Image (tube, rainbow, N blue to C red; front, side, top):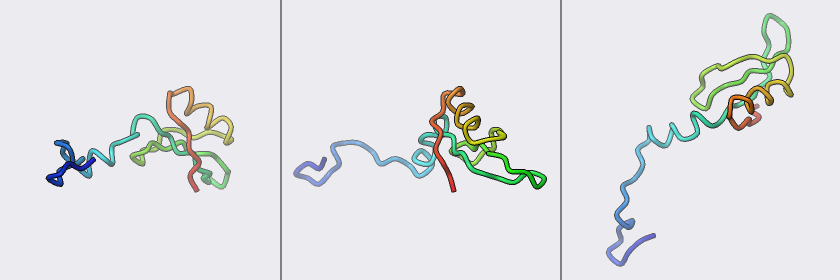
Length: 75
């Protein structure tokens, strides 16, 4: 919200690093991968860290939820 002087109501802008860190502990991306020629499902943190592998999509989503992360499909 802007005031008459054109400021942004006294808040400072978020740094690029702080913006990039949003959701790091809350989101897990689920993506199909190939491991030694076999289909698996990777569970990947929002920062790109590989968290785990699962044999099927449903188990990958369940594992993310059990770890208190919101699973999101990634293509």
